[in-house]
Image 1 (cartoon, rainbow, N blue to C red):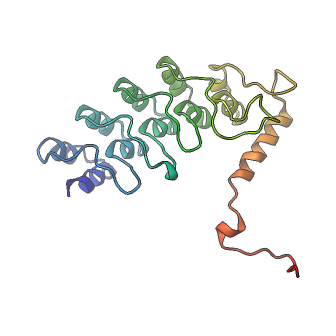
Image 2: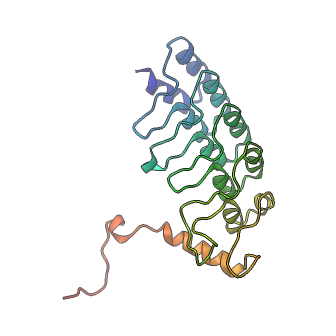
Image 3: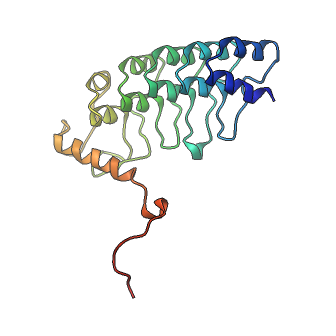
Length: 210
């Protein structure tokens, strides 16, 4: 019963209640909900650095991962998304794996580059994050091999400070990424994220075929 109370204490940002549950009620610090979310993952997702510190001090698993079919994010992915260097450093210092991949094959370094957090990029690189790691998206027509590197995402999202910390992405035909390529890849990403008509529950307006 104490597991759900941990989540509520984190949502309420209630440090005293969290400590009470962990140290006196002996709540399971690695309790998971139906999504595979742990208290540590939730605290990182909600950007609660002080709560992350308490959870780690009480044995929270820094490498816990949400269910893969629901995204497969770790606390470090959320720290990277939020651009919270303090949380990222806390997690890394407690053994969080810098090269863990989510459902799309993206590491925390990919995420930090997508959301434009150079301080998190630096923290990840200092702990061995692989700048050549490729995610599961992409086509060989654009890249030398399928999948995009963190530097690709930094460039396509126009986060130049992040890009400057990494080796340049490799494209066919040119060592420089043209504006055309950037616009094309922006459009590709948008297309990949548009739900189908079946997903939206709608129907096409075209004429019925006999």
